[in-house]
Length: 119
Image (cartoon, rainbow, N blue to C red):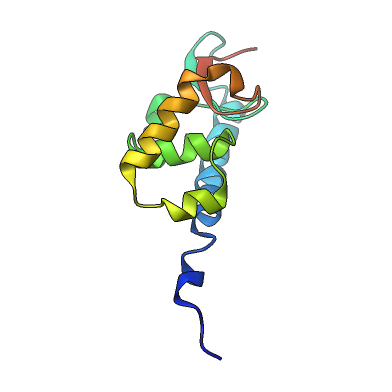
C-alpha cells in the first residue's frame, strides 16, 4: 500500500502543541510545588491555576512563530487542521495572534494570557 506523502504533515500541529503544553505544564507544576511565583507577580496564565514566567515561556515557546502558534492553539483561536495548512507561514501566525490579542474578551478564562499570579 502506497502511503500518502501529505499524511506525515497532518497532525503536526496537534503533536507539536501537546509536546509544548506538556513541557509548560511540567514547568508550571514545578513552580507551584516550589512556591516559586509570588501572588501579584506577573506571569503567563496557562490554565486554571498554573503559571509560567516570561523566561520559562521564552525557553519553551520563543517569541515569534512558536509563541504565536502556542498561544493561538491554546486559546482555541486556530484549529489543528488550519494550523497544519499554515504551519511554516510566520506572517499568517503573526496575524492570527494579533487578531486574538485584539479580541481579548474572546480568550477563555482558562486560556493562555499575561496576568498577575493569584493566591
